[in-house]
Image (cartoon, rainbow, N blue to C red; front, side, top):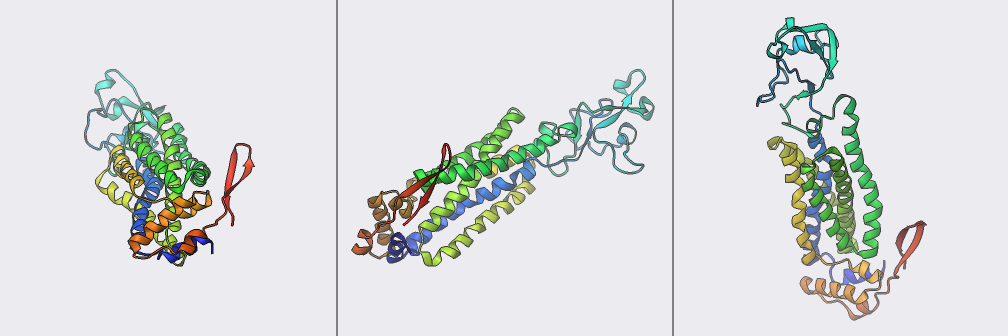
Length: 335
């Protein structure tokens, strides 16, 4: 056990101050769970079919997906079964723009859809319906979610390295900013390319959020409770996953849902005012005096004292950087 952990135990590293800080750090873990599943609803795969100009109204406020005219306007893939989602029967005859009857559609000829009607019985809209990511464009919907996962992969390296270089607290704040700003901006994306870029940065913030919270929370508590603390902080993560489903029951427009569940991450920027930096990181990067001050603050609120020998014995080695590849370094704490 290193000297910082010994000092943590000496000031009762699971006293009321540590319990409070740990609880506060656990709460924002919900946003990592939210970020991981919000696209299940924001990018909801809605049932769809061709828009039929002769029969469908662009001004209708009702769900017209199951209109009866589909029997003679949309080809059936199999008799009595599902219908073609990407083609419609060709309108024929004169005055067809004002008529909707079987005689005005040729069942011998089909044409690709130019517009679509979506089933709004579950979600009123989604990224899929807003940008028509259907038929030959359906792969773009998958890409949008894949880019989020790529963002998480990149964030694992970037935020982890940033945390070792500049501190767990700064990494936490940066992650809050990324989740809150990109999460709030995504509903206003003017095009798919912008939305994909925002999803990428949301992925970086999402993984960075949990990484920084997890490490900071565990480095601020005693070694005797770290295992349990590492497990319990997963609960808010799971709650975030469940929360999105609950909110989606009442909020069925994807833009509103996205904003409501992710924008509140910005509220937690206030943590910069009172959450302490990790004493382990401070000592490990040569800022021993600041680390001692954090430990003394813990002792004050926990009703204990930091022994002089514990304070003077904080000799954890500094961060050693090893180059993994040009331009990227990995920090390692060694005794």
